[in-house]
Image (cartoon, rainbow, N blue to C red):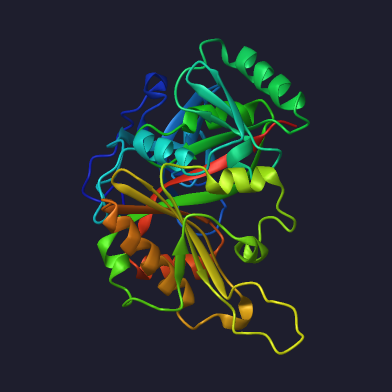
Length: 338
């Protein structure tokens, strides 16, 4: 609980605290079932017309009538992390962006407009790491026009849940009618424990480029075009892992690999992506073997920390990565103009 029974309850937040991380206690409307009070922790993204808007770590926005406030205070901008490598949001945002590069990009102040023929939201959205150099509405008009010229929907990638993330920008987009789409999380962890999960596995082959069989297993594109290969092969130091499928019966067509994975080494960081296993070969430790093999190569290149991205509703992947020692660093969301 943010407020204990012995604590003196008073409201120590004001509209001047917009942009800060706060904890507030508010009264539940009379007649509602359950507790009489509820606690909300997050970034105070607005306080207008007697209503507070607080964005939680997950990106969820909560509206709280000012008249219902019982207590409130500013809290540290980022909770202390109990495990995993120390990392700021901006560092991780730049590292993850370099690992999934667009085919073309353009600067708008501190924003980067990215496009890759529509292949994945990450490569076809704005990365807003700072000030666009003009009023927000003018910047959003520029964004809409840039993506319209390419026949793509206008999207911004917004992060929440860590010091320096973009809760205020996300709230501003929502207020302008932009739609929040798929949410995901960036997880971090130490690299060496991943490499130690298995011994060298002869089934896993690691190379510098994806062959045709690798792309057949990759599920984000049924018929990979040039933009797909361009995104997959770009990055500071890119590695691809493959576990070939068992030999086919005589006369049968070649099968896609049993498992694949991709890793990008960038300084101290190793990022894991596209770890996929054929449903017929799951629960045989192939995802673990792929990540361990990639981690060993990344250690050889000098990396010591690891990151990955997982969608918030992917329970099996979350369980797997938690067991490897990864933990959530921050959340991110794509907002689309409508």
